[in-house]
Image (cartoon, one colour):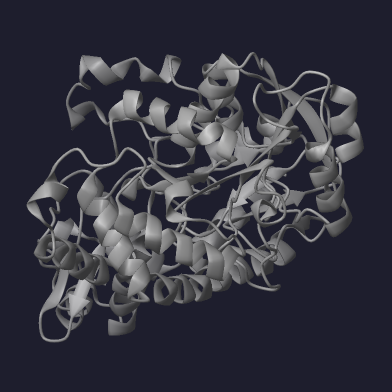
Length: 489
């Protein structure tokens, strides 16, 4: 084989193995370190194959992998170009020639909570990030979203360029009311919907409102989301662990805690993937409606905070209705487009019992006045024109294919493992008898795979496991990652 002037590629350095994977990684590394910039054109597949002395199929497959990841873009007759700068995993450290980090951010590692503290801090270019909760960002509907933004700008009145309603723009609240009715069974008036900057801001507003009413302790699923738990702690509430089993939250254990509010993920529990069973749903609503001896101030009973996590990502079973549909006076419903579109959109929604609505709207006003108008109008257009539903159908197919690839890789490399939560979501919980999940995560990090231990999401004792996100990686990278993990199990 020969070499290429392009990136000084030398196939002799590939060693034994998959030449396609080597070429894809070389291009990925060049984008990462700045040798290739957004808009740069790559050699034609036939030209590069001739230079490397390999089949054209090798180059075509490598370009296709990187296009699936959102790194490259190709069009008929227009060649292949770099689509966007590679966004390295948070686990990657800057290279010596990357330049000094700004002082304002260099110390954040010791300030912000890190659910992957046990994960590797790996500088290798072939790091595969399997962190849960990451959607397939390469599938973001750029063209459709751009059309929605153009439509929003075209119809934007001068008054809508002002600060706006702290509850959110009427157009988006009306669109969300229809969407939630169709997909989650929630009947809500647009005036009862509060647009927020994601579920995290919704939890902050709730924590401050409940704290002002004297609530100090709140029930929390165990295991449960590390990030949500730390948000509540940050705003003055102490999470009290409530066990989760094969039917979801243990409502009997919840009663024994003596708390008057609880946070749950009933549609697809994080991280176990369990769907709250029908009898548990009834028990939880009965618990909420029972008047506590002392509870959150003006509420007639207890409070259930429903994080509608992963409700739209269903593969093998129909979605369960939202808890809010059963008891609107006792249930707060939280949702967002962070997993269905992208976290960068920063749009979510909060529906609260009437007794809390005014306080939450006031808190939202004093926090940041209101959400930006243009993304709200674009999302409203995207929902009402059917673009959102079309996008969800497409990403469900992609996510399901990636889930299936992960399951096949686990069966091949870790035959003793058990996968949980396969019917929905963007991640799996994987358990292996006798496994030390922290040690496995450390060894996986040394092998270039970032994955989270189940123990990082626990408050109490419990069996170990690995929480593996699959939506953000292509099937071949998932297979590669599981092979590396298996070496450390």
